[in-house]
Image 1: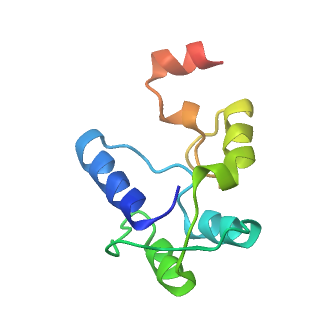
Image 2: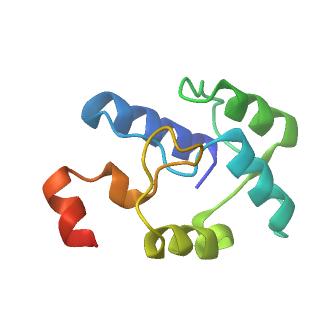
Image 3: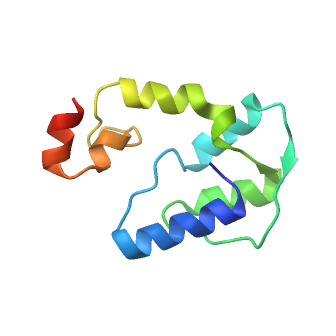
Length: 107
C-alpha cells in the first residue's frame, strides 16, 4: 500500500491513466501505521505525493512501510460498501474510480 516504490507506481498511474489514489491519504497511512505490528522500515527514494502533500511528510516522519496485507480488512470493506462520490468527505471507493458503465455492473 504505502512505501516509496508504491508511491512511485501511484505517480506513474496518475500520469498515464489519470488514476485517483485510493486509501493513500496521510490519515489512511497513519491509521495503518498504528494498526500494523510489523514495523517494516521504508526503503527506496522518497517521492512527492502531490495529491496529498501530508502523506509524504507523514511517511518521512514515521519511516514505516504499510502493505496491503496489513490493511486488507479496510480495503475489502470498501469493496463491499456503497460506492462513494467525490465531495462526500470520504475517499472514493474502487467502484467510484471505474468508468460509468462498469460502475453499474459492479453493484
